[in-house]
Structures are given as C-alpha cells and as structure tokens.
Length: 344
Image (cartoon, rainbow, N blue to C red):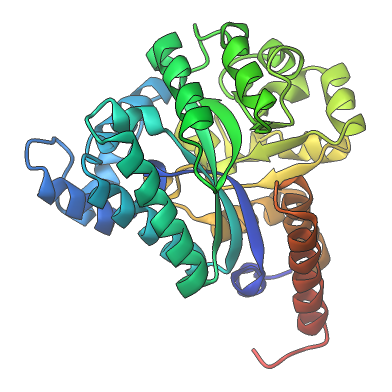
C-alpha cells in the first residue's frame, strides 16, 4: 500500500489498551488546567506538546500524574470521559475498553459513588449519541502500593459499575513486583472480572510470566520484552493470550529505543495474537489510526492484513459474542467494499 491512512480512517476498530486520563486531548487538558490554576500543567494547548515530551518512563509517570491531578470533581470526570469517546468516534472506534484508575480520583476527594455515576453517565451517552461502546478496566496504580490495590479492588467489587469488565495493574514496573498484587486480582477474578495487567514494558520476560502464573492474566499490557524468551512467545501463541501493543508509546517512554527495532515483528512471526493500541494518545502525539499505520509499515501489511489486526482486537476483547460477530462482520464488509473500489 502506498498510503494506508485512508483505508485505516474508515476501518471499524476496537481498542483494548487506552487510558482514561491519558486520552485527554490538549483542548480538554488545557480547559481542566484553566479550571484549576494551581496546577503546573500549561493552559495553552500548543504548549502541551513540549510538556508532553518525556525523557524516560519515570518522567512520563510524573507528567501523567500532574494531569491526573486536574480531575478533581465529578463534572471533570464526566467531561473527560465523554470527550474521549468523541475522539474515538472520529476514528471509527466502535468499541473500547478504557483503563480507569478510580483510586487517583477518590483519594483526591471525589466521592466514589459520584465518580461511578459520572463515568456511567458518559458511557451511556457515548453509546447513544456517538455509537461508541465503552467498557471499563479498573487498574491499580502500581506506584501507589498495596493501599491503592486494596482500594481499587474494593471499588471494583463493592461499587462495580455496569460497564466494568476487567481488572488491571499499571504504573512503573521496576521495583513493583507483580506477585504482591495476587490477593487483589484473586478477589476481582472471583467476582467475574478479567485479568489484564501491564507487564514486560520496561522489565524482562519474568514480569510477564509472573502476570500469567500469579495474576492469571488473560491479556498482557505491552509485553514488549516477551520476544526475549522463545518459550514465553510459544506459550502466548499456544494459549491465544493477546499482547496489547502500543508502538509509539514505547518510543515516547524510551521502552524501545527506535521504532525500527520495535519487537512487533517478532511477536507476529511467533504467532502471538497481537492487538494495536494507542495507550495515552495525546500525550504521545498519536491516535489509534496512526498506530495502525505504524504497524502496517513495520509489518508490511496490505488492507487485508490491517483488517486482520482490527479483527485481532475484536477477538481479544471482552465484548459479548454477538457484539464480536457484528463488529467482525462490519470489518469484513468494509474491507470487501474498499477492495471492490468504492468511491473515495
């Protein structure tokens, strides 16, 4: 393909690894910063490009948390959530599992019931008005320790919103061992939630093994270092355990030094179920359409190959079976019509 962008722009898609606060557009971040002038976050959308230039993963976490601090009221939560869905609709994202960190909001004083009501109101409005189906992954901010894990598990179980489907673990990996979070994942899994921790983004394959064997992961967030362990790749491929791959994110946080060295090729060659995602798109100057274009170039994909990536995300999602069939059929129909030469 000479230019995959037109095909990708119209392609119906699902996204499985995208963060709630990290999806705030520069316009929304600037608006929130203006509401809360004690923050160091710039109120000029253009200045945010420099602010979102990261020196390493630790610096990314520092900046990310400064944006988290802008979400202080239920109205902030609702605004952010609906606007994220609006940006998704523009990209023809039909379904998304949005990673939400409720601990970050409740510890800043947002009442937990009001928080749940805000995200649920935005979710229902997004589906009715924009045609975007949202589901939630409640994740533990690993840097906040076991107190955050306990609170996140409690909120997931006792205040469970209708849209909640999974339980995750984000934040730094170095010095934040996965096994310590086992009791909290066990509790969430017992309540029917799926396990989707981040693992192997900035650490080695053992972190991924820990996520699989101790946290009973059904998908792995990032999994970048999986290619260092052939037995791990074989295990992932055999059990159809998807990797939520975020190419531009890995470059922005310096988890991968050069896009040409990104391990997505080795993952696909090993037969692993690879999904493409945007992670924290405005912070990394990207969106899901761009991530598909990056993956298409790295993997040398034509339209059918790109559509195959989109269907991987549908397969790996926690959408209900009927919803999966509908979205997969929509992808196939769109691709077939495109290849027949529609007016474009």
